[in-house]
Length: 248
Image 1 (spheres, rainbow, N blue to C red):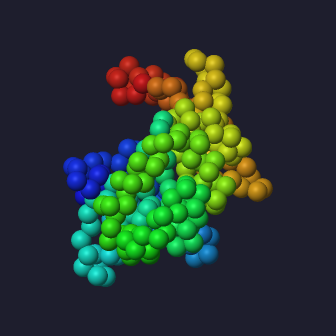
Image 2 (image 1 turned 135 degrees about the vertical axis):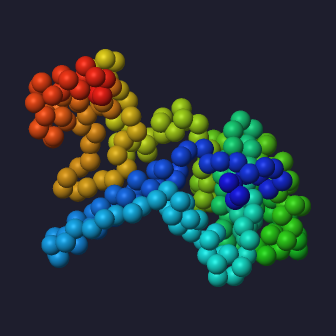
């Protein structure tokens, strides 16, 4: 939270439980590696994967900045510490993110947005100068983006090869043609509601395509299956456990 939030605001949490998600990803990678090691050596091993460790590893370049250079992290909102302009701006109807990451893109940006005078302004002549004068430049870009809708700016910027993208809500996200093309909306049969729509699998295999084959289980749906088939419990044992409230 120390590095998440607007520069002059309070720290805030990330909008999704990202550490939980990343720990699962790290765990799956670790399991795969351990299985390969077992295949080669015949030895199994114990895996110790903690949320805390994953959170630290997930700091990536922020952690390295401190450990290597002693540079303390801070809040930047959607802005970039060393590149300007590289953040979210508010178009007339909704936010749009842009990444003017080098001088060529800056020249293109100024030309296609009709702000060629910025190219002649010594305060903005290079990225270091733009970083130095961000408090002057960013309000000007804010005013500029407020004059058109997000879609209008997207058309202009994409044509000029300026990295950009709308800040989508869920409705916009799941209506995006690329999301549909990538099969990121899965439809799974469900015993009580008919069809359940879920986010699709993000990993694509050429020979063994990913799929979601079963719905999220109902409460206690697989109790008998797990106890009898996986653990070998008798029907009488299972009935006793249910009667005692030990299982559902």
